[in-house]
Image (tube, rainbow, N blue to C red; front, side, top):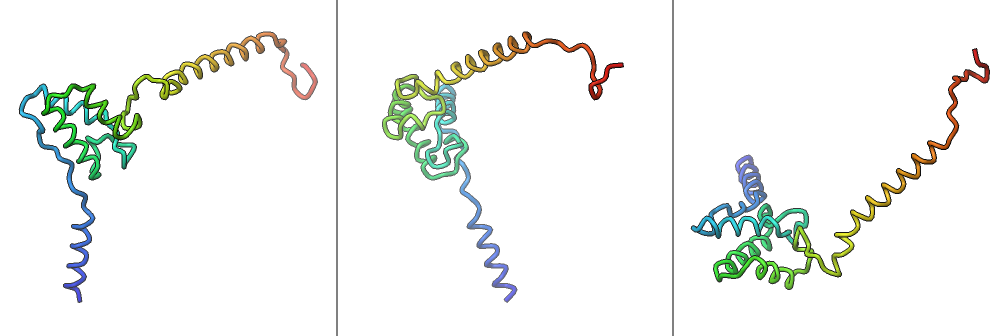
Length: 144
């Protein structure tokens, strides 16, 4: 009985371990390897959503890494690789979405929020400057 329990536990521990991320070099040329590393760091895993495909163990991430490696090997530019990924998966796949009509709100919203926050701060400060300053410290309504 103990032997079976050990086998079951060992099997569960082995089955639970996730496959390792492919850490081997994709290219012998350092320039191509640098391009590959930069691209896979900028592409979001469509399964994990909060990880780049460089850091993800998901099968789709491994497929995307192989696809990017193939496209770079074929001589495609970074823009062509990015366009391929966006065509297939949409703008969501990029950590830094391109400037377009669809993503305009993502690019403009921070500036709009900063403007309104600055406007609110100025209004509050000006309003407080118009309030009378009470120099006397009152303790229960009687001054000493």
